[in-house]
Image 1: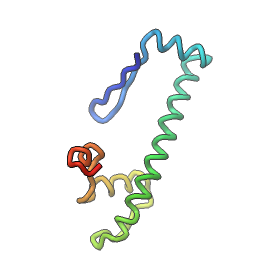
Image 2: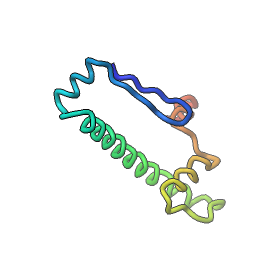
Image 3: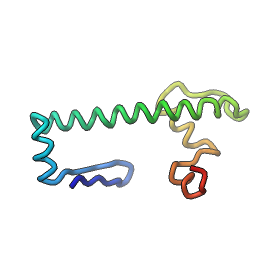
Length: 98
């Protein structure tokens, strides 16, 4: 069984022996598996960033307290996540607005 954990700002994960055998049936070796997983995460990150931009650029433009919107990916994410109205998906779910 695959196990993934979040701890102190980073994720780690592992596959049990049966899962590794399953993956090795499809991939030539561990480096191929690693590359595949890395690509999945990279593509998902790109999708999430595009969705964040689509949601937040209009909000930031209409906020009179915002003088500029960062062009840097990391700075933009920080600008959004420190905005006074920002809430995580979990926070929205708990409040009933997700």
